Length: 86
Image (cartoon, rainbow, N blue to C red; front, top):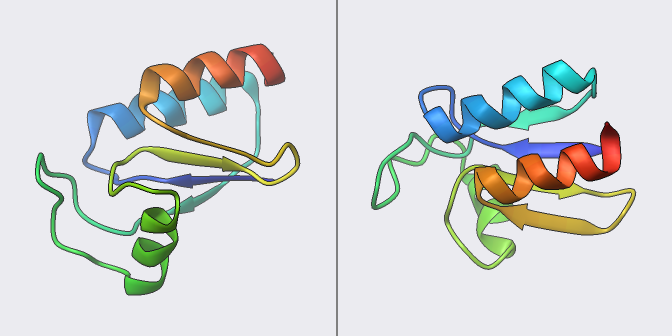
């Protein structure tokens, strides 16, 4: 299962969502906080804690539970998706 920690207003998150849609891949979206250079306001404490458990407070953040992989950064995430799901 793919879990995307993202924000609707974040252009980097939008790039990842578009890639997921283009590839026809199902995923679960979590919205832990609003976008912002220094981290926007937290909107969901539980998913924000999960986001930070990956080692950072950066969105987008993708967790692939089937492959036990986790990645930050839209460029790295898109490359990973195209490698493993195209």
